[in-house]
Image: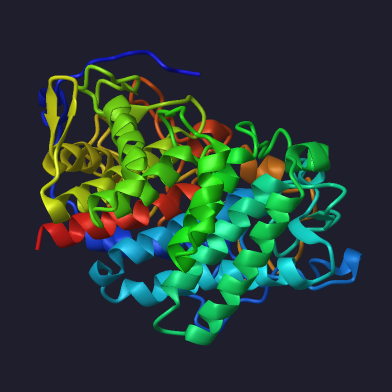
Length: 482
């Protein structure tokens, strides 16, 4: 874990390239990406036409229908834990910035609904079971094949009272609750259905406590282990149900869980920082002093992230990129940036300021750091490379992604089989034949270098949760320049 205390002047951050960036174009592409990750029967308005139907029989081994949902990253597995976090973040960003999204609001809602329709199946397919994944990840990772071709076993995974999964259930409840707010005014019947299921799934998470990592073993680890435990998902799920219902019992539950530690990251695994920012809204914007402690936690988090804060525990590269961990670092960049822009937005409503020691922090202070991260991703960086596929002229061409790297069904109707795709398409230096437009990959290393090699999955693999978190900041900065 990289926790070096590094103090970096803001002068350094703004000394790099100042190329004009089209945030609206990036916003559109960041949402379009999700169509490339779809599982199930694709709709007639599918825009990434190189993708086809896949996983239509998912759930059949358990005699249930679990078709739909998203593949998490480069593989053909449906992991509900990161998929639910993706959905929660996409919903939160749509709630906060929907009015700034313009024509992309409808596409954002469609991306959310593709996941929530699947989660509703998972929550109702069988009594006393919450389905939490489809596809054997160990078998899948031995293959390099298109999702349309996959012939590995589509194992079905669930949690139950005797094999609990409070972390995955808590996150699924958060996703359903957050999405219910997105649809509340445009589809109240669907919204009510989502919220009712959120309450049910969360009750299950609280009543039968335990980690899904323990219950599922190698189906969860090392892929998406719940390293931080399950209390943060209960905390996060309760925070979203509080926002969706205004039922004070969720606040009482939050207060019993205890979350005095202030992490300096936010991710699909660790939700505390996100929950603190979410609940701080009632203090900062709503002047409700019952939530002052969450505001303090949110500001402590910001103080650990700002580069010129005396309390910073966050490393930045020479090029100005926030750097947390060597694998898939941009997932932390986008998730933390999402929290920064949202808290800055809350602060702006009341002209609120606070201090990190002697540093006075305004919403402009936070916004400038967040904008630097977004601009870096879009191409204002030492390599002058956009880390969003299909955005700009210089972007990664050899991303670690099965569907993107193999010829489409239209180009090659015959199946490749499990291992046949490795030699001609995985190990080749040729660019991927299919452009996964909008995909943000793991990103450069600590030296701001990116080799663009398909085999370098730590830096070249995209993931749904990387994209979900940047949708809001892109809408925020697009609207702020108008």
